[in-house]
Length: 496
Ligand code: NAD
Image 1 (tube, protein in one colour):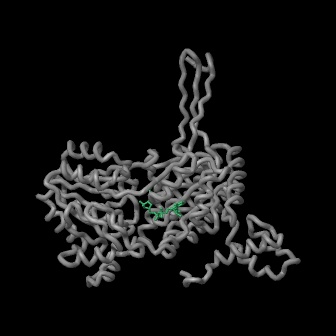
Image 2 (cartoon, rainbow, N blue to C red; image 1 turned 60 degrees about the horizontal axis):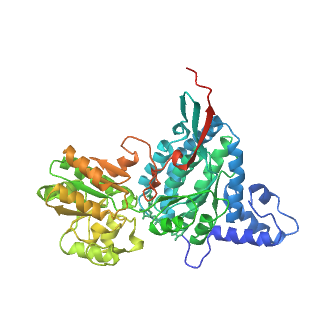
Image 3 (cartoon, protein in one colour; image 1 turned 90 degrees about the vertical axis):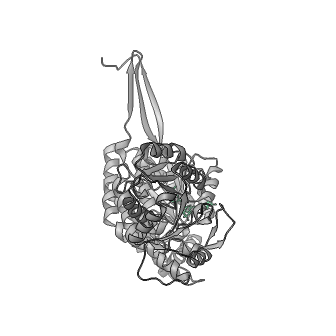
């Protein structure tokens, strides 16, 4: 971590490169060979240019150069066979599994969010279960009038914006899905996750080259900012946008005039009714809501429990390790985690420095002593409490009583704010489960399991860390990043 006002190595590298550019030295990429043979006429800057080893391998000082390099790489990939593309994806999966832990620890160290061991799980999950080229099955229709083929084609360069909450898992997931579809990528990563994201891009670059792919299929800007993200959104070399983040970046991408696949915020509710297996519900909700300290957009964020079982559910949550906030403690925690409360049923303003911190840290900051390291804080609150209506991304889970399951479903729908992101329910009443699934209308609906099961971790199916609810793709995969193209042969090629 740098002290305020102190430049990071990366910033020093950038200054060096820009200085070198002005002095007429090689501009981009400043790759290892350029460093190995410094120009003799400029000895004064040699030591600094040496540090620009950090550039290259997909990392560019200038956005224009990153886009241009990705464009060239796209054309090369476009000329390769599907078998070679598959080999590249295999190499990426292998490398990302090998480096899953190192990248997770790097992301945790740099962002200070979540729990390193959970980030390892996320990285492994996306490396294993993000769908690849196998899902791009072409369609053939034959009949009296001949044969029609429909195939999945790439767009070209995809401008991709990633969050600070899942920096490396989003990069790995997006890369596998987008490259499988034959595209290349320019990432503008979250500034607070710049170093781990660049390390990830470099590892991907090496894996791609090892797999026989071209340089710079995956690129990023070395010094990402909101401004560079916005420049990427309107760059003429970028054919498609994929953004993962909060409402601001989604709104901005939708205004860009380009096709945008947007994965926005959520506030996933859980409903528990009187027919549920309460022991299983308590254990699974705690595991889900505490996953990576609740910074994952799909994590359980509030619970609506039928009045007759709420007390038993909370008791079981305590048995599985949750810390119940009682009396004055809830008020103290609220004062710690919110900088402003805007009244009942309103989204409160959260204290940013506490996002993704351990429950024990939040307790300590609230002046509450506690033994050990509870995974989650739980509070029984009224329906209109701001904790219910706020995507706080902290391990503080509100549980609120509802008179019956229908009221729970309706309130859950309201608390989800119409994001259409994620939700779930614990019940053995199949009618209630179906009613909630239909009513809540989310991209992911998990029945009787932790919400990470809905991401394919402990549940069936592929995964994605870009869940595009506003634009409707849901869990994005190679098909989301493909154009459909049709070819019609009139009168011939039917073989029957
Ligand atoms: P964020 O919105 O602060 O940042 C996300 C990315 O967008 C970053 O790269 C940031 O630099 C960029 N950005 C932000 N505002 C921008 C603007 N006005 N113009 C251009 N670029 C802009 O989000 P975060 O804190 O990194 O992530 C948390 C949020 O993302 C939560 O709301 C969470 O629910 C959501 N999220 C959603 C998904 C999903 O799949 N739907 C996945 C992860 C996170």
